[in-house]
Amino acid sequence: MNPNVAAPRDASRAPNELAAEVMTLSAELQALAASFEEAIAPHKDLLATHGAPMPDLTSGALRSLSAMLGYEMRPLCEAASSSWREAGCDVLRGRFDAAEAELRTSLPRKVAAGLASLREMGMEAALLDAAQARLDAGDVKGAAIAHDAAVRGAEGT
Image 1 (cartoon, rainbow, N blue to C red):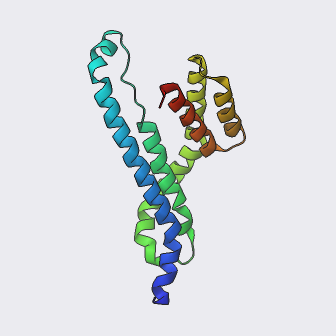
Image 2: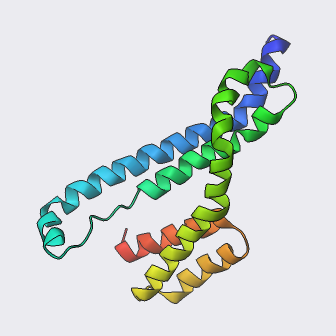
Image 3: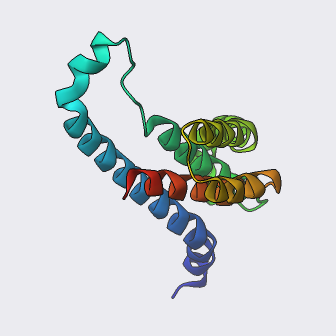
């Protein structure tokens, strides 16, 4: 392989794998949202009658995934030798600060609110305590995963 091509390919491998994983998760969330919309359709009138908003189970997660994608690409654009990817970095630079804010403040706040809501609903405390401990330790990703596991357990999925 041409050494002029090998270095950029190797530098792009991990971010590209992350990007592929984010896109896969986004597609899965969109599919779940579509199946949820289909399942709740017969109940829309009941919700409207009682003034209940339509549940939105995926838009926050999709925003977070988008933010993670932008934030994780930041090191590539800060490297001294990023000239070959400068056009893409120009587009992404505007997103880095917003992505970092999403990951450091908004996402932990959303997880904490979700845990509080699950506690109010009587969810098993052990699962919620484990998620809260991860959040308190600064492990936002682990807290989000534990939160999602608790939600799946509550839904029986």
